[in-house]
Image (cartoon, rainbow, N blue to C red; front, side, top):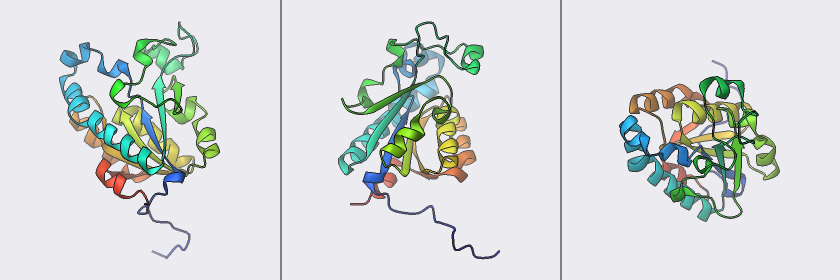
Length: 206
């Protein structure tokens, strides 16, 4: 193998002024009461691990000076006529302004944080997030949220292709089973640096 002088390393300190945390779909629809019995493994992962880890990530990153950006599944209309074909076929509808579209109170945005509604799995496909991040001067994107093997996966892969340095805060993510969560982390691991929240926060340059 020949040496490539242009090849960069995934291991680096993150400059807070050039770093954002992206919280993916941490919204009320994910903590609706039916999930407690319908998806008990997911419910336990959300409340026992992912949401507390997300709180630590948001608090630590905000203190360091990072932008905190949220995305939620929410149609631009009440009847969802603007949704992607996949969301229409899958029966996914969170109407504009619905309770289900709100960010979970435990990790809620502050008044000046950015919240981007989307109607697809990939936030880079159905919002102007790349434009917004570049306007903010963001180069590094730390991703956390739900579901690990769907919308988080898409954010990591698409962000990498858009030229952002991607980091996944693995313990602040969850999906319907731990097996799916772990498998997804392995599969998209080539597109990002995968670390726990505590490890991520230690890489933020003081």
